[in-house]
Length: 157
Image (cartoon, rainbow, N blue to C red; front, top):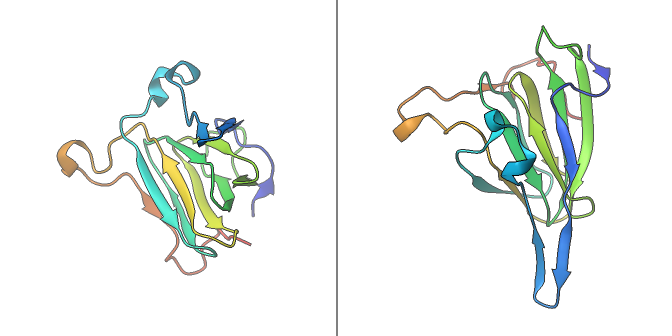
């Protein structure tokens, strides 16, 4: 059973959308706003269809730095699975995206998932501090996946 509450090490920050006649621009992250151990080493962009879910999963070493900007809105779920954390067994759920652009820094050991709760395909960017599958993609992927485990305790509502 999880308790609703904050999760130590998770950072949720508003993203300012700067708009002009050409469109808009958002600074997804700035190096001077992150501690060195969280500096990104790669970036990727994903598209998630309306109503679809990604996760839940967690990382052993990797910190994720997501930017939910839009289009669409996402319900983001986080569960603190770190036994040594003061917020162990807390669950945090937020909505971020088109209506409320946010960045989320999610440390290792925090299980996370997101669902596109909007009516259109949504775009999410991630700037993790570890390379996917290591240098030249020759290492084991740093990921524990829970979405296909029967009776998982990581439930999305």
